[in-house]
Amino acid sequence: MWLFDKDLWSEVFNTLGKNMFRTFLTMLGVIFAMIILMLLLGSANGMSNGFDNVFAGTASNSLFVWSRSTSEPYKGFERGRRIQFRIEDASILKQQIPEIEVLAPRIELGNHRDVVTVYRKGRKSGSSVYGDYPEIDNITKKKLVDGRFLNQNDIDASKKVCVIGEETYKLLFDKGENAIGEDIRINGVFFKVIGVYKPNNNINIDGENAVFIPFSTFQKAFNSGDRMGWMAIDVDPETSVAVVEEKIKKLLKGKYDIHPDDERAIGSFDMSEIFNNIAAFTTVLKGFSFFVGIFTLLAGVIAISNILLITVKERTKEIGVRRALGATPRIVKRQIVVEAIVLTAFAGLVGFALSVGILAALDAAFGQGNDFPFRDPMVSIPQFGISFLLMISLSVLIGMIPANRAIKVKPIDALREE
Image (cartoon, rainbow, N blue to C red; front, side):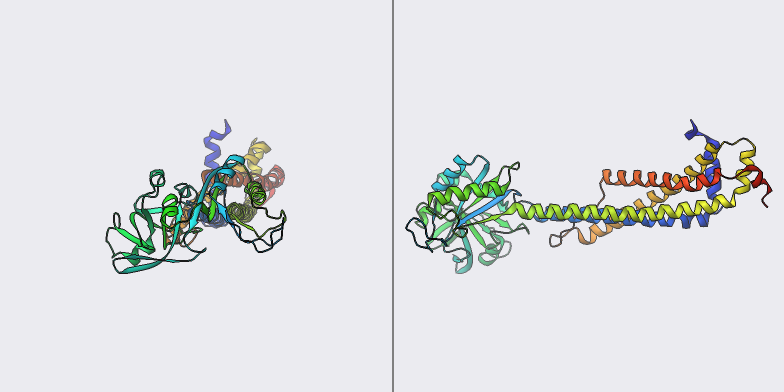
C-alpha cells in the first residue's frame, strides 16, 4: 500500500526539511487559524457551560402562576375585583392537566415582596416568610450549607420548623454559630431552624433573606385558612409550557368567573422562555464561531498551497527527471498532496495543543467563580474531530492545485531548464 511506502515519506520529509524556516512560516498560518478556531469554539462552550451553571437548580420547563385583580367586568362583577387562589386549585389543576409533573403551592406572609421582622435573642431580620411544600425544592433547588430542607413529615405533622437563608443567618446568628436546633420568632410564634441555604446565583425568586416553613404550619400559625398565594409548576419536558399555561388560565378563569379576554387577572411567568433564549443564543454563538474559524483555517491552508506552488516551480528539474525515469503523474501528484497534508496536520495539531493551554489558562482566570457565566471552556472531541477532518479535506483540495501544476511539467522541457 502506497501509504506505507518508505520512499514516499522519505522524499516528503526530505523536501520539507530543505528549507525549514520557510516550512515553519508556512505552518504559522494554519497554527494561528487552528488556535483561533479552537478558542472561538472553546469560549462558546465555556459560555454555554457557564449559563448552565448559573441556572443550575432551576427547572428549565417551569411556570409560576399567581392571582391579581381583574381588568374586565364579567358576570355582574366589577372591574378591579381581587382574585384569591385556594389550596384546592392545586388539586384541580393536577387532576385535569396531566402534563403537570410537579405543582408546589406557596403562600407568603404579608403582601408580595413584603418583609416580616424575625427575632432571635434581641437581634432581628427583615425577611420574606413563605409557607411551602417540599416539592418547591424540585423547581428551585436550594443549596443547603447546613441541615436539611422541608419534608413531607413536616407537612403532615404541621411541625414548627423552618429553613432560613444565609443572609437571615448572618443577621440573627454570630459567625460560626450553629443555627440548627435554635429557635427564631415570627409574629410571636417560635420555629426551630432545621436548615440554612445560600442563593444559587441564578434566577432567584426567593432571595437570600428568606424563611421557609411548612405550608400546613403556616396555615395554623398565621390563620391563613385555605388561601394560596401562587404556584410553582414543573411541566413535562415533552410539552410546551405555553400550552400548559393556557390550559391553567382557562381553568382558573372559569372557576373564578374571570372574563376570557382578561389578561391581567392571572399573572404568570414562563421560565422556559429564558432557557430557550439562552439555548438559541449559545447555539448561534457556536455556529458563528465555527463559521468564522473555518474560513480562518481555509486562509491558512491556502497559504500552504501558495508555498507549494513556489516549491513546484523550484523543483521543475527534479520533477522532470523523475518523470523521465518513469514516475507516473499519479505518483508525482500523490507526493505533492501528501506534503500538503503533512504540513496542515502537523500545524493543526500544534495549534490545537497551544489552544488547549490558552483555554486552560482562561478557565483558571475566569471559570472558577460564580459571578461570570464562563466555565470549562474546552473543545469537545466531536468538535475537534470534525474540525481536524475538515482541515485535512481542505488541505487535500488545496494541495491538488500545485499537484496539477506539477504533472503538467513535461520531462523534456524540465531537463532543458537551467
